[in-house]
Image 1 (tube, rainbow, N blue to C red):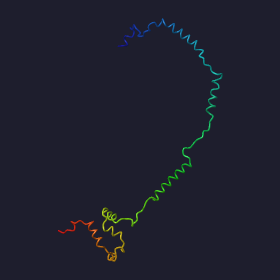
Image 2 (image 1 turned 90 degrees about the horizontal axis):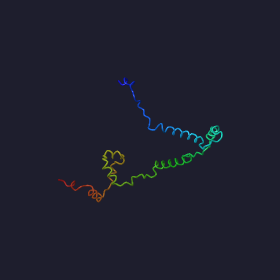
Image 3 (image 1 turned 90 degrees about the vertical axis):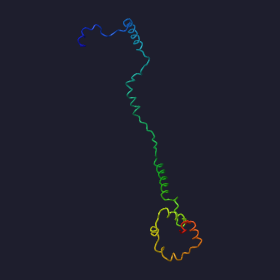
Image 4 (image 1 turned 180 degrees about the vertical axis):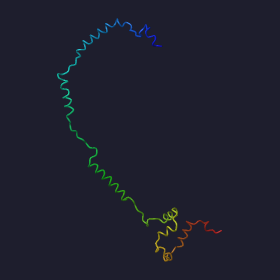
Length: 165
């Protein structure tokens, strides 16, 4: 339908700005004056500038100046630090700071608490003793004082355990 009315169009749809043709002559003359004035811009190039420009750039780029490279890790410093680290590691592995306890330095209370708290039975204790330690002669010759027995009874046995019902 739109194509049927194309031959009957009376307006083109384009408009000319107001006073366009009155001011057109002034615009063209001002452009001509500007072009005349801009022919002499005030900047001058040296003679044969563009002929020698390529060679000058290549000369500046191609000259390689050697720069001194300072390494971050020198071999001597690296060996020195690794030697210190190895010494400290060896010092801790040799257990110089560790005091090993001896049997004489243990208290009887410490051993008794360990046996009570760790649920060590009589078979485990017997496995630690040799046949010579379990001979009857070792138990016959052992003398226990009355005072020691009293102190043990008072410290370890409750009165309720002693009273018979």
